[in-house]
Amino acid sequence: MGNDQEPVGGTVVEQKSATVIPNRKTKSEKGPYVVGSIILSIYFGTALLMIFVNIQKGSESAIHELTTTLRDALMMFVMWIYGTTKSGDRKTEIIAKSGPVDPH
Image (cartoon, one colour):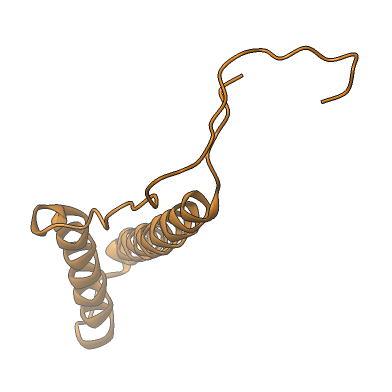
């Protein structure tokens, strides 16, 4: 500290234990994966329906709209899963590497 600075009070001298943040994935967090599996099965079911069943002319646009919506929902699910795990791992890494915090 320079001569023109005065101490604020309260300092962290040393960190005595490592910061450990456990992995929070438990068996009760299967809900998103169940939803993703349902979206995936409905998407492929609709795609198979379009391939193997002769669809009436009036229903084609509704089936295509449903398939597009399910594809978008599936992509959002994949991005969410990848984003939350990657971001969570990065946050844990940053917190584990950080030193003690001086609140003043």
